[in-house]
Picture 1 (spheres, rainbow, N blue to C red):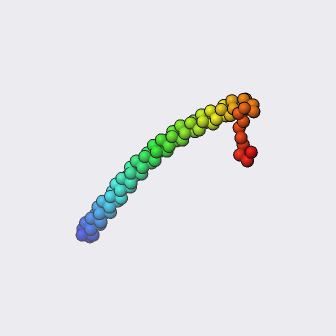
Picture 2 (picture 1 turned 120 degrees about the vertical axis):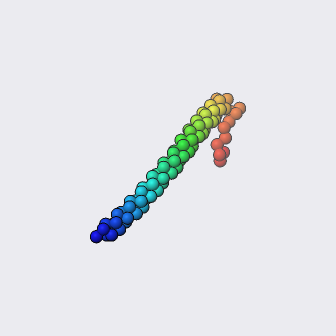
Picture 3 (picture 1 turned 90 degrees about the vertical axis):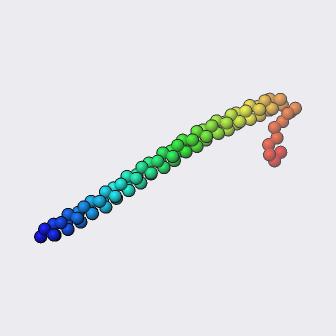
Length: 86
């Protein structure tokens, strides 16, 4: 009976040790995933900033182009904006 109890305690210790290893591995993976999510979020924020900047530049070019067209059309027949197909 004492031998069975000792054997059972050894098995429980072994199971406990393996369970602790699984928990440590889980925690390590969780930290690694959190780090990757942080990196991805930083990249998304950076690219969002770049896209916002690009959109502002495109809007500025469109505005300049519209102003240039209005100025050109204001000169009447001297300067004429040709549409494609004209």
